[in-house]
Image (cartoon, rainbow, N blue to C red; front, side):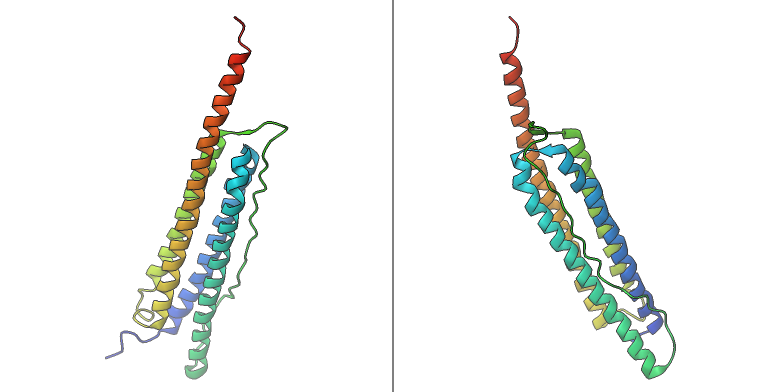
Length: 211
């Protein structure tokens, strides 16, 4: 009877290519975070709280982006190398797409005022937060799909699946934590800013009431 943990190089090659597809898809979602979250925040949040929150938040997202890229690049390359080693010893030819990290430098150069005014555009910030939630969910879904692929016969039960599970579980946790922390920081501090802006506006308007 064949060992249930026996490697099927064709399956390993397919999963190696899925690692690349997963990385490409997650990097697309980091682009979403830049274009649909960080760029709008820069445009629509302009006060001291933005300066307090966003540099650290952006730095944390960049750390996660780097971790995802380097981890999946390493995993995909290792699986591809395993297929090539097997092929050299046993013959056969399997198509492995090259995988390479594409680390991004996300930016959010917020300022403490816009044309001398301080405040935020609440609806636009809420839309950005929703986009962050959706991007996070899409990243987690891609990693879950990759992890489930490791259950295939010809891959499961050995060191390769253990490494795949380790990488996917760790990256899901890192993405969840980083994006959740960013969302919490934004909602907490924009809530404070919104209250302050509304209070200041109300006070100013009352000063100019005609009686």
